[in-house]
Amino acid sequence: MGRTRPGDAGAKVLKAASALFYREGIHAVGVDTVAAEAGVTKAALYGNFGSKSRLVVAYLRERDRRWQEQIDTITAGHDDPRERVLAVFDAYEAWLSRDGYRGCAFLNAASEYPDPEDPVREVVRHHKTALRGYLRTQLERAGSPRADGLAEEMMLLLEGATVTSVVSRDARPFSAGKRLAETLLAAAGDEVPRPAR
Amino acid sequence: MGRTRPGDAGAKVLKAASALFYREGIHAVGVDTVAAEAGVTKAALYGNFGSKSRLVVAYLRERDRRWQEQIDTITAGHDDPRERVLAVFDAYEAWLSRDGYRGCAFLNAASEYPDPEDPVREVVRHHKTALRGYLRTQLERAGSPRADGLAEEMMLLLEGATVTSVVSRDARPFSAGKRLAETLLAAAGDEVPRPAR
DNA sequence: CACCAAACAGACAGGTCTGTCTGGTGTCAA
DNA sequence: TTGACACCAGACAGACCTGTCTGTTTGGTG
Image (spheres, each protein chain N blue to C red):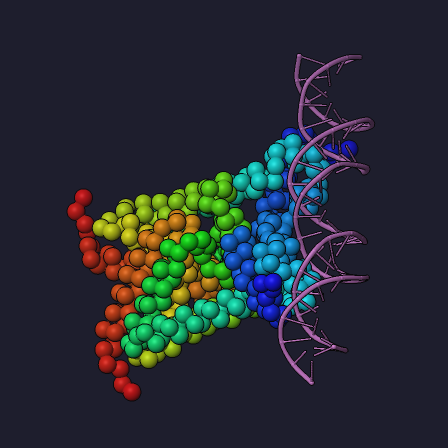
């Protein structure tokens, strides 16, 4: 009666884990808590994920998947590659004002997992590489002669604004970041207004 | 025989805690481990600090004190305020290549303590406010008409380079950050080459 | 020398952590 | 109808956590 179909305990666990790990921190949340919040037994949790470590990795992968969807939405919503880059700033800033904002889940996870060889850190690197790659691709399409360097600069501004906004608890870092990003993009455009090719 | 004088157990604990908390993360290190590493009993640890939370706060305060000393060294070593700002980038970059680099201890601590009201977060805010204040003061002395905004931008670049360098495990973010900082400082100088006053 | 504060050694309480195991229950498909 | 399977309920092991307590030893000071 009201019993959910077998097979979706994993999804419920992942959802609960995602909320709890992000909000409280990973080491601060036990598997009992995750299972209870998911309305699932610990046995079901271990049956689906095998260990807490693997659940943590699954949590980050899921998070990365959802982030990728947002990026796709941005891509679909803008034709100009420069606008897409700036839209990333807007998306991050909008996310800040959502309830329970705690900054970048990947950076938070990385600071709880010191070992660079840990699978968790691998997911973090994968995510950041994807972000950087997106920025670089868009800047290349915009015809920037130094898309790579510019992408790195955009990364610094985005990451800097994210961590600073967590500490200061306001959106000013994002305003400053986006303003500077616009300036840099405009300057890059001036350097080579219509590049060959 | 070889017994240390009474009264310095606190210092030994702080030193051990500083190394362990930074390297492994705060939640990952128990007080037993700290006491053992310090060569001190748990009773001595609790006698000096009262609780783990207070030890964590003391750890961050001590870290902030040592950081302030580095800032003073930079101030003493450069007369030009613009050079001082750039020297901060150099100092952070040099720190990266030291063994066991794990990024900013304050940001790492903040991501382990979600509650903004926690005393730990207060120390983190204090530290970041001090950094920002230093940058702003130097930029004001340099005669920049928008020292405040420029200081914010320098913060973004510094923090961005720090967290990015942790993930990617190389120094490129700092190269990019410093290069951009130099450009911004030069541009700010051009705007008002010799400001009134 | 006598005293005291601070450290030592180490047991202890009470709780939480990850992970396992046993046995019962509901659902679906053959 | 029967069997496979995924789940529930909850106890359990063993390690680790923070924090406290008793009693002993030591170094520095009056």
